[in-house]
Length: 450
Image (cartoon, rainbow, N blue to C red; front, side, top):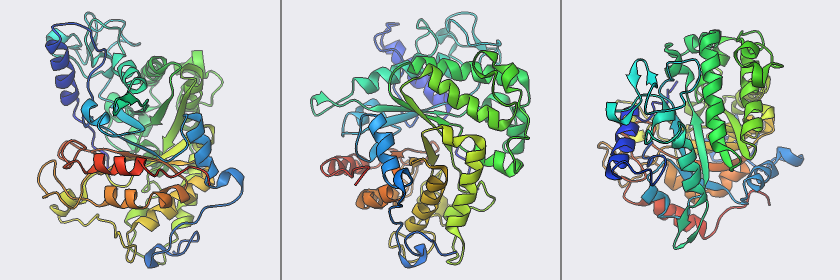
């Protein structure tokens, strides 16, 4: 299975602090500039090039995509990225995402000031001290904590393209269980939820993020990878304990004290504090202990495995959300090639693994949960790269923009591109390929409903 290695916190801090230094301490732009930050039953076997067909049955078809898009003020497949401000304005992107990760404040509740009295693991969050690992202080320290989020919300709402207003949708990937708990990866993360002190801090921090989003439209992506480890740790998330009600009696006193109750608590908190945001859990293709997207067997039951994962997401409470997030790979294929691994998907869909298999699996998950798919952190590489740092090859950008109707037919509502690690290709290092593709797509976007 693949683990999504995230943007380095030090990079965020360096960018944030240098921005504020350049402003001579002036809060002229709250927040910081983000960088990097078996045979398929639906539409034929992926091995022989079959593609997923649009499902029937009301909202279990493509119009579940339209419902999400409409709630966000859009009507066509979304295209976004993790990117610098200049890139975000260079093409008509629909959205942009960033991570919230890296650990928490040392007190029991979020700090009220970054300039004084706020530390993470004993390190001061003040700009003069170099900053800290808590996202709430990745900013000019004279602003109230959380400007990292509110800053993106503001920039997205005021985004322009080609001299005209072009509002974007901010997407926040909240990824804190692993790093903030101090646990090792996997089952230990799940057990960390049984620590009431940690869980209280987690839910208080999550609340702060939501409050900073406020009434603005946004996408809230909850804990990539984590739910896959939950599934691998136990068949029933309702019996995996987590003291949810005691950790957050203000918002979740009625929730079950379990991992399932934890997931539902997060979704209900989003409804309460970020009223125009849409929220979703993450579907890891390896969560069922088989990495479906890497499958090479034409007889493998891709649909069945997708349904199995979908059923587990339902047990967690994913039907209370608005979408499900999925990812294709955590690295460019060229990066893995140098490590002796072939992770490239066949763009002719003649052999496995390929794109049709991925879409078939995603559609099975989506149909089971009854929610559309948002593809996230899609590798940015392309064939023109030379397989060196920040210039690794991949074929996903080119394929997806050549076949956007396939994405929508498999209940895809959005494509969000970005590097999963600091050495990977980015929208700033890909030779302008992503920007060019987004411009061309905008001339003929694919509607979410027929």
